[in-house]
Amino acid sequence: MSGFPGRPDNPTGGPRRSYQVRPDELEGAVRETLSRQVAVARPLGVDPAGQAIRRANRIRRRRTAAGLALAAVTTVLLSAGMAQLGAETGRDGAPIVVIGDPDPSNRPIPTASVPGATPSPGTPAPLHPSETLVSADGQRLVLPDVGPAERAQLLPGGGGWLVVSTPTTAGRSLWAVQNDGLVQVLLAGAGSIALAPDGRQVAWRDGGDLLVAGVVGTQLIGAARTPAPADAEPVRFVGDNVLVRLDPADAGHALWRPGAGQLTEAVARKTLNVYGALPDGRLVGQIPATDPGSTCLAVLDPTRHLNPVRTGCGPELSQDGVGGISTDGRWLLVNGSVGKASGALLVDLQRLGPTTTAVPAGPSMTGAIVWSTESHASYLDGSGELVRVDVGRVRAGKPASPAPVAGVPAGDRPVLVTHF
Image 1 (tube, rainbow, N blue to C red):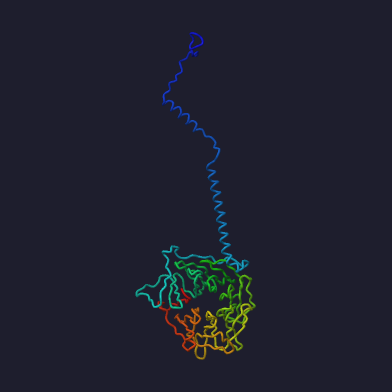
Image 2: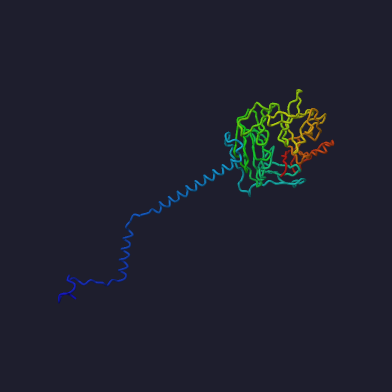
């Protein structure tokens, strides 16, 4: 209706506006409006990709820092056990090299056998080098992928063996042979190698230096070194100290205390050989006698530059350096001669004096001497046969006789160890 009579509500005079819209037209219009809005690029207030990259960088930095901290803590803990070696003289030792297949299923496993066991007929010869260990009671253990060797002893914890090779033109090697067959080369091309009785330390010659390191698992850590005379070589451990032969062609030994600095040459020039330690820490060795060409036994004090505190002369002693002391410190087995008999001699160290006596104990000894009890010892003779010494029988005039090691091929020389 209009406020003016006779005039319509739409003063434009055009056609009436249509309010009839079909649903499909409305839907098309809405789609077109939305598509136009999407097509317009608008700046984002936040960059999601940048946030993700920055978050990843933060996580990586935290993980790196945590890894470095863990490595530092591990290094400190491992080095703490070797603090006595003297950090001021330490340098990195030779790298550890793992040889062989890391898959345990493909490794030859060390195999043990009991006395009397022999290989079955037609058994083929081994394709890989190996070394046979023999215990004082005649048991055998074959170590694969090592050899030939001159010494072996258990790893700390008993998880395998430390094996010292025989000398070659390239030097000596030190292997760690685990019970699962894995062989690791701890040292290669070294000079003389000495092992601590508990297997926790190793000393060796490397070029113009002497080195000592701890054994942790199957690794050498905390190496310390000192310059050494041209022909000096480590012989054995005396506690945490290293007994060093100054000149193999002449008399003279010295104790190297790794935590105290360099080796002192001007000491202990009277000793020819050192056979081992007594329970009180003193050493038993061989020194020149007053008569030219003769030698005597002596008890040496390691706290006084290895000066002799007691001597005993009488038996003619070999100068090959082979000998071993019983666990109670009373008996010494040493090569020498008494009258017309030559070979291993048994000496009562409690009766060491001007007229020391010795009795024949068996054929000449080679390599290590193992005292399984205070009155029973074992060793290998020159042909690799096992000799078991009973002190009671030897004192009664019945020297020990050699016996072949069952299962060891002719010409092969086993390595004697205390036990498996």
